[in-house]
Length: 138
Image (cartoon, rainbow, N blue to C red; front, side, top):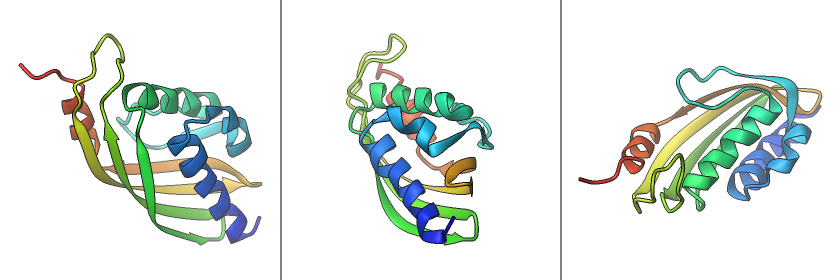
């Protein structure tokens, strides 16, 4: 696949699946045995695991939005740098909404094969803010 095609797959993941919450396209974007190399993130592997993770995030943070700040590619690799904004307005795992806002930065590095995401690495400074948002104030 071309570099532009690979960038379009990543852009579709970010804009349609994450921002739009349309997890029905997971099988179109991810290989069945997609591998997530992000330790401790709570994000699953496989196409269905990724869809399940996005649904969980969008349940707790319905307005979770990523703005693409940079998108670069070489060969079968694509890197995106983004800004996250979200508000904890949804109940999740028995935790009532706290209204806590998140503004964070992040990066993904993806390996694509045959036009689909095959492996991914994810870094963000959002995790402490997510944890704080999910803990009600005393």
